[in-house]
Image (tube, rainbow, N blue to C red; front, side, top):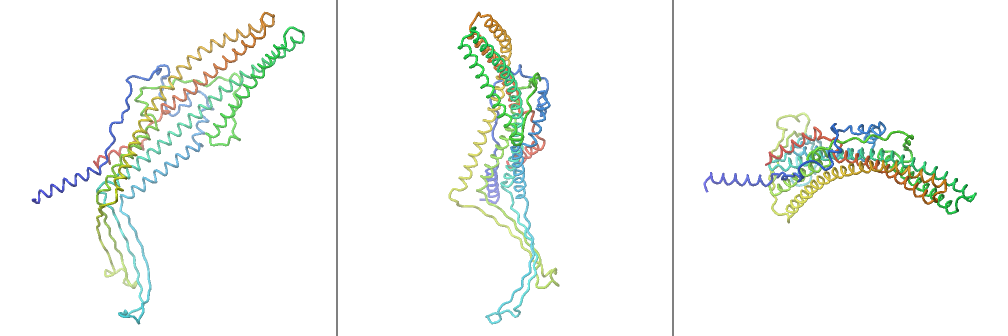
Length: 486
């Protein structure tokens, strides 16, 4: 074979090796979506773009204050921030591997040899002064070290997005609990009114029974309704206390020391804003959890490429130099200098399948990361659609219940008058009062469900989250480094 042919063959082999170690970017990750907008989107869309100041959309300063306090004190968020620091430290460590390592040291030794052994030195007492520096550099000709650094950077960006997702989760949970407490307070107020009403009715029936105008059965029915309503009131109060305790945990406080003042009667409910939705494709760009999943997919792709480099030789350059002398007087003279240069190549030949297993493991982690990304994407779209479905349904329920509340109140008042005149027995009064209370509470629960669904839509849309500038730069650097390897 001629010299030119050998050079060409060597070049082809080198190119094949480099291709083997390059990182293959994941294929098109677009999630199939039906054309057009979400169902019921027109009923929820507002005119103002959703941003991180969304708590103000509800028009309740206390809600906005509690959300801000939770973002500052919540312990889950603090843990997420600590994980960011860990990921950034890993990035610094991986980038350090791309640089040469330099060690310096000095020493002094004094020793004596025996004068009675064979080949004894003329001078048995020896001193040595030494100062030396060592430099070691691993040549990243395979791109493995750059791949590890890129994977660490992708994981760091994912950790930052995870922290943003934690903030969004905490903020929306605080908002949902706060709004739920407001409507539980309304429910408690309705039950308290009915407890008073039914206690008054019980006294009236007992008075009528004493004069023979009502039966003992009517008294028992009236007492049963009064006690049942009191039991429902106790349950609603328990629910409120548990909600307040949950808010305390979200705010990073002890449940024993946190309290939420009950809203005064007649205080208007927080506004239910119309949340701008946009197209399904827009949702995938607004979700921090989806962005984190994609960055982890990047990291997994880099890990596959790094695993492929295990079959390639590793080139290491070392250099050392310094001064050594028996006396400080001539320590820095030229004859006291010492140095050395070396280059070593290590080529793995047999490891019992360890490298194959490492590559298979990296490919499996990539498959997991890709499936996780798609799962998060589909869940995001489902959460938006479910919230829109709930909002549309609850608005219809509220409209129907409002009409039913007015009608049931009229029926209850009419039944009480008819009973007072002796036209009907107490069965009719019990049924009409029970229906009126049940419909009133259903209307309150429908408004509560609308509030929770509205907050859920804010969360499903990402809460106005946008890709941070630093994350965008890191992503561009990752793509640039990948192209360099490929």
